Each structure stands twice: as C-alpha cells, then as structure tokens.
Image 1 (cartoon, rainbow, N blue to C red):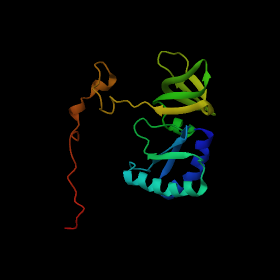
Image 2: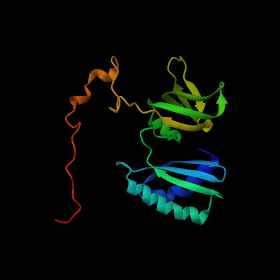
Image 3: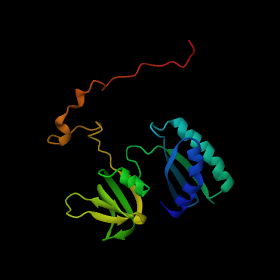
Image 4: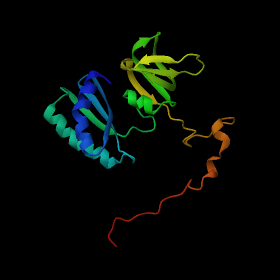
Length: 191
C-alpha cells in the first residue's frame, strides 16, 4: 500500500471494526484532479453483503469529511475482496501460502516489475514466490510490493471446464448432489 493508503487505513479501520467488519486494505490512486479510494472489507465467518458495503460507505464518508485526508475530489468504493482477492499484509501472504499470486513491484528487482507464482514462504519481511519452470523461488521484500492479488483457480471453482489430464479431473463436476439446487424462495411478509 502507498503511504497515503496506509494513513487512510489507519484512520478508517476503527470505524469499520465498530461495524463488526475487518478492513483488509486500502487502494488509493490520484490521477489529475480526481482520485480513487477503494476499501476492501471482510465479514468474519460469512460473505460480505451489499448492506455491509453500504453501511461502511456511510460511516467512513462521515469520518473522511471530518478528517479530510484527501485534498482533491475522489470517488469512494467499498468492496469485498472477491475471488482475485488483493493481499496487503504479510499475514495475508501467510494465510494464502500455497496459492497462486500476481505481484507488481514498486521498484524493479532483477530487472523485473511483475511476477506470478505460488507463495511458498515468508521469512521476516520477505516473501518467497515459486515461479513455474524456475528452480529457485523469487524472494521479494514486502515493502517492495506495490500490488498483489490471488490468481483464482477457475477450474477448481467449477467456472471453466477441467482440461484432460488435469489432476482436478478425478471428480466429475456433475457428481455433487447440490449442484444446480436452488434454495426455496423466502418471503419477508408477515403471514
């Protein structure tokens, strides 16, 4: 996260926590006279609902108006992390060890600014990422990571067909009873 994003996250985290949610991270980008402030929130032990995003947006708008950390006009977005979840902290990288990640670096390292691979470990403030076809993992300091996102395994999620020979192909997508099942409609009326 940029220094401004860290400052804003520190300002807003208590408000988000007071709503029973967690502020995963903040993205802030200023271009021209308009900036974008994007917050990612998570709800413990359940999915984030649109009502959660609306409540956070209302509450933090008031905090931002009072503290005024952004001098230009900005657009505020509040979102769940989604399947291509962004990773902000070392703890996030540790939580998703073994998963595929795309990383953009602040400063070039070994002549590179982007990489993709599997998170294989964290030591101190450094993250090791194993790239396909490379013998040694690429080790990068957390402070040099500008942006990182998980790469969802769409085949494992059942969103794309499994390729022949893929290890996931051992179970048919149609073998689960719940697939295609719909929950019964619920009424909010008093009956």
